[in-house]
Amino acid sequence: MLNKFFKLEELGTNVRTEFTAGLTTFLAMAYILFVNPDILGAAGMDKGAVFTATALSAIIGTLVMGIFANYPVALAPGMGINAFFAFTVVIGAGIQWETALTAVLVSGILFLVLSLTGVREKIINGIPATLKLAVAAGIGLFIAFVGFQSAEIIVADEATLVKLGDFTHGPTALAIFGLLVTVILMAFKVKGGVFYGMVITAVVGVIFGEVELPTQVVSKVPSLEPTFGKAFAHFGDIFTWEMAGIILTFLFVDFFDTAGTLVAVASKAGLMKDNELPRAGRALLADSSATVVGAVLGTSTTTAFVESATGVGVGGKTGLTSVFTSLFFFLALFFSPLLSVVTSSVTAPALIIVGVLMASSLKDIAWDQIEDAIPAFLTVIIMPLAYSIATGIAVGFTFYPITMLITGKGKKIHPIMWGLSIVFVLYLIFLS
Image (cartoon, rainbow, N blue to C red; front, side):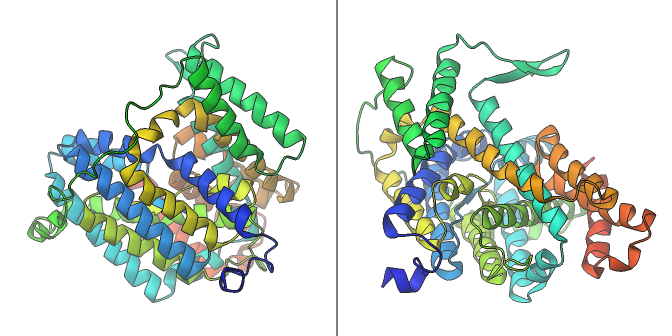
């Protein structure tokens, strides 16, 4: 039954591989269960309620993505956009968090409309192959940088912005150990090497006291009451130019982060066909629905997670991977203390290795064609430097029609790309 529904044999996978992939994806993104409540808690929201809202939005969004779209892509409240929600909108602009949730809800409804009309699917399929490859590689560099940073292998520096961290620091040393173990497993072609590398790293961390054992196994699920439905209470407050700008920002970031992630993960899983994303409409509908559900539950924008690539890295190719990931998020509601062993030192090696795997798409870019090379390079390099997938896409896609015109190939530009370039210019102006 599972084989027929998810087309396991057709896509060259099996239940065991999909289970491992689902668990690997969950472990790689489990940090959101604790990071999101901390960030939104700074905006005055109840941390316990946000924890539950985060888990439930991940469960529902990922389950819909797996069953409805059959993609190995997990969803959860996005990093970056949650910081914008808390520190820019609520704390910086002095807007109530309930009103900010209303803005997220409205942006989600706009997503839903665009998805139902097929506009989003047409946009993604209108993007040239070169830029899709660049997006995949850029996201690879981005998540690798996230891994280096979270493990403090790379740290901030006032003079040079970044530098190497202290390798004698316990968590950093553990992450480096985990990276070496994972590389060895990958070199010997151990199936599931990324996942087993995380397990070995966690065990060694416990042995050497760098990872604390949980004090309890099961905990009560925090009440959702403080945040549930609050997004409906402030619709009257969103009809201002300031709120319009905020809603558009939520819309832009989620749209292009999700588009980039879907393309990147699908490319890595070998699911792209003739430069198009199969069932893109269903995948986008699942994502937009998750944003609406998440806002109602009480969390910032829910989006496709780039960490889904870790599951693909161990063989995940179908929606069954997502179903298993959602199952682990459900269990996390009751066994949250056990997640204390999944520290940044444990997940960092997985992110770095997946970054390496995703960067392989660079080889298929026509670097000898300047009209392809420049926008592709800018897309790839800006993502980690600007610490934003959406910004990297915006810069690269803005330069694409420019380089095509300069080289006399303007007639080959898809109409959608002209529209996107205008939208991206406005996005970059607004972002600045």
